[in-house]
Length: 140
Image (cartoon, rainbow, N blue to C red; front, side):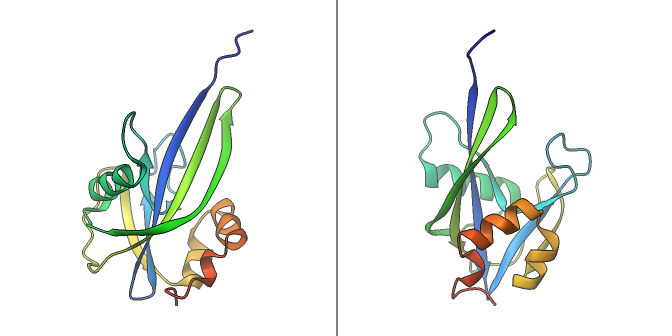
């Protein structure tokens, strides 16, 4: 049995504009989380700075220029016996609400706290609650 494993680092942005958070819906046939709602972001590429990677991923996925405000929390989970994902979630702000989706997503919504709790997968809602994301002053 091999002891090799892979760790993937992903960065997500809780992008806030006028008290609402941008969430995006993955394409239905995506191999990971098809059809589910999430915050914009993606994988860290080798050699990238964390915030630079997040800015690049947000630009690629939703065509927004954002300001990274602060790190909100980190979490991790295993996708199988040899692969673990580490997610760093940042608070971001945007002065623009005009979204242009990449091919990875089929829909988007600017959501308030109640809408976030309905749309996001339960694991993300639990992380948001545990890390006081819903209590941020910038959210309605």
